[in-house]
Image 1 (tube, rainbow, N blue to C red):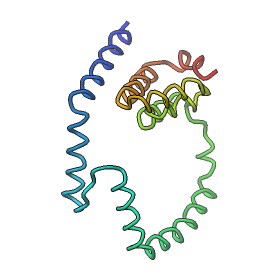
Image 2: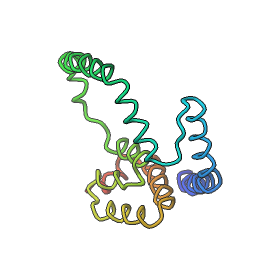
Image 3: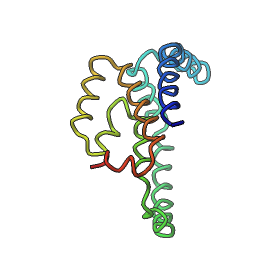
Length: 155
């Protein structure tokens, strides 16, 4: 009973926060990045050019980081590989995907719901803020489901 009350309340709060603060938070985040780094970001093209500039200026550091990362990763996989084999809950993975990539329908594709994943992509193309809200609503739904309730969604 409590879940039936909490889910609509959580959905309402997510929608309200997204509508109220979404644009302001995005603008303030870009302003904060500009203040900290000196990078002026107005759109994703600016991010691409900033990354390209960083790569051009720090090619040696990036190569050294790659050379150091490879043996460390191999060592970790050899010594602790069994811990990685442990099965992770698909519900938890779907929640993470819904929160971070829900706007692309990644959680739906992960669950084998290809049709719904394509619907998410179409909604993203038509009206992106709506699909962000829908992805967060899915994350909230999955969070409040038990493993038994979640199992039919995977099939």
